[in-house]
Amino acid sequence: MTLNGRRPHDPRSVGIVERQYVHFDLSLPLVCGKTLDGFTLAYETYGTLNADRSNAILICHALSGDAHVAGYHTDDPNEKPGWWDDAVGPGKMFDTNRFFIVCSNVIGGCMGSTGPSSLAPDGKPYGLRFPMITVRDMVAAQRHLIDHLGIETLFATAGGSMGGMQALQWAVDYPERVRHVLFLAATPRSSTQNIAFNEIGRQAIYADPRWNGGDYYGKEPPNRGLAVARMIGHVTYMSENSLETKFGRRLRGYDRIPYHFDVEFEVESYLRYQGEKFYKRFDANSYLYITKALDYFDIADGYGSIEAAVARSRAAFLVVSFSSDWLYTAQQARLLVDALDQVGRDVRYHHIYADFGHDSFLVEVDTMTALVGGYLRERWEQFCAQRARSSP
Image (cartoon, rainbow, N blue to C red; front, side):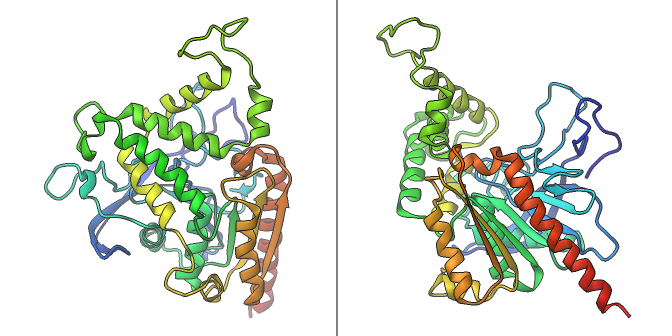
């Protein structure tokens, strides 16, 4: 929920926003065969829901994201904004003058939604007693939030990376409730290489003696293992060229190589900083559960093929891939595009040449604003014109 006032040092921001929570006292059946008996979702909203509730867009976050996609929680000028603040706001990619934006923390997360660090019915943290989750389960939980907000049909589901997986899953599982899907730097199925990198990160957490089989709440958490997992993941989000451009072989505080095992190169310092920053805000068990959900993701699961799965959808699609993204490649994006073409769905595909790797969907602000923002504006104007023609 956007609160009154804007921070004067950032006039294009949505301003100060409030994280909200909704608890669902119901059973959520999960793909693994177990049931989550009651769950909470943390979420934020931006913009205004129109009278007929037709202008809502659900932004789905990636592995390390949360509900705080834009704006600020305080008036502290040193506070950093939400993780996609460049994209959400008045006149931005997701224009809050036109759309009502919703973003929720996924189940299994650690930013306010029910996950392994949450209290189980016995009053103790779930830890590894938390059931295994999938992207389909994340979307099923989000569906209850959208119902709670009184929204029958989403104008769009959108996201990059794991967010794109959720956006696609929405169109397959709830085809009558999604008009458009924005599938950015994502894949319709996790590849063997994707699974392999996730497993290396999990092994780093398992190897930290403080992980203690997931039972570390109230004790010292496995920060070292989680930091290494983040370092591994962060390298996959960048490209060789972006690393070379940003750091090269520059030394950190030395004129020549000192030949020791402490930090010598700038890139080593950067990765250690990213790891430390991550463990201060994220839960190691959530990392395990969410990376497993990524591994399980295959939109064809239960349908026999990608074509059969996407044939269920009624949405129009915008699919975007990036030339330097070696985590979720253009070839993977084309699997979805070709399947949509084959079953006759409305799809636009853009392959963008960019040097920032997987993170290009976050970094290439001007390109993405023109592409995604332009698509949304065009489709919204078409929708409004069609609605006006059909009105008595």
